Length: 290
Image (cartoon, rainbow, N blue to C red; front, side, top):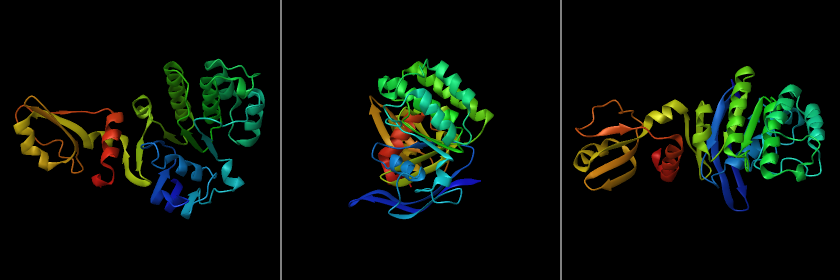
């Protein structure tokens, strides 16, 4: 079932086009990687979905309703950004009481568990927290809200690697217990990509890719071997990058035709790429891959 629909969505700020005629959907009960370079339009679209911004033209629908200034929709969405999510003077304990009244699916036990997991003192005010602790509060609210749609936009600024891993594992466990739509924007792609069921890549305000994660890993990969053998096969692929070193070469390919099962020349081999490298190579080529 589709929970979020984009129909010809364009957003302009002054004369600058931030989002350019987007048409795609987010399906329910998936953990989605929403990826792209800085300035690609990710945060702008998430603000529109969350009802904070309106479109310049086109429509966004959340459960068949427009989210902008729509209180019926806003309770179904929890949007956690990289900072400034909560008033600085508010105590954590008061924030959690407010969340309980705002989010219909709020789970107090989950909130208490995350307070303990991240060693948060609920008597402290938001402004008294370190950046990492403030991010942990945002993560807590995002998970404990159990909102039908939860959006995390770089939610863990300042959190150390150990705290981030705790977050990912707790999020996955809670999602398995209560499936919902989770949209995740991050630059630490390799850390969290194992959670993604589907990846959307946006570039210069346009949708570049919409693809299941496993399939993306199958169609973007490296082929290495002697240069003369690489030259024989590289015309069969869309080449994202080419390297040469002392008689050997490597090409990073976007294999839409999925020729990855074809027999490679003698001395050549296929090498898998991590998700971070895949996204870097794909966004570097931008609209040319389509």
